[in-house]
Length: 348
Image 1: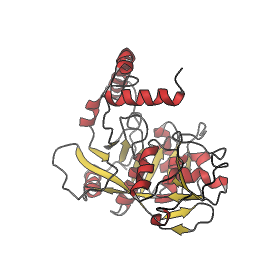
Image 2 (image 1 turned 90 degrees about the vertical axis):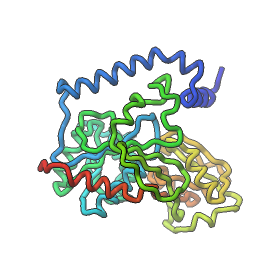
Image 3 (image 1 turned 90 degrees about the horizontal axis):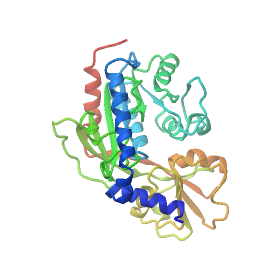
Image 4 (image 1 turned 45 degrees about the vertical axis):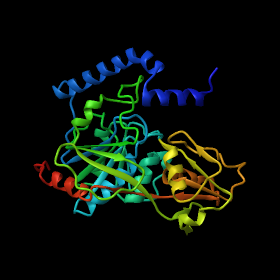
């Protein structure tokens, strides 16, 4: 019998390149295609109502299931719009938190991941923007505007497929996997057909490695490359900072990542000259209810910012957060977005 990890690896290979298992699952993908098309048609013809907020809505999502780099993109979008005179707020599902019937709204570095979800808590801490969470993002948007009536643009963290919230701009974030084998779930990794990428306003590809600035082509959707640039490491327990290079070439350095693509984080560390041992890949949104580091003899353990939000409760002085900042090949990406929003008719 295959181990669970082996099964997951097999499915990942099939999703990327195709094969016997993917082909076997094609009838189920046909059901996914039918459900997706039916849902979109019902919203398009008005049989299902969509909430139209009185301010512009920017949705940042993906068609590839799992993590592709949406959270850094959301943070960069909030900061880019704020620098251009907007006052953005964020709505999110609040994955991993038990929200209840009413949305939760908060702001600042003190938001608990257990109450808001790890990604919304991280977005609030880094960007300072008000955040509202609820599985029904229309309710989250309404609660956000009630609590913060000065918000003049809503950025939706994920929610490309959440059509109950009408949107003005759609941005897809993908990574080096692209559309994989091009098939819908479960035969492939796609939540929607690959043709959906032709309908959005921009496609941002998280390539992992820096590149030179380049002008965006005039064709729609706008295309840009994104990479994540690491900053100084921060000790989670004590708050001390240290250049990431200080960990390079040193023994006793380990790493862990509970994100959609842990290998991307480990590749970032290797690019900085750090060879973590061990390098523990955990499930996305891992809750750290119990410390996985108790038996480790490492002197330092490097984790992502998304992990750091939850690791603070472990009170382990060996833990260091490695923050990242999104950079883009298109230097005019957020100027383009700001102009698109300014050209929308006022709805207040």
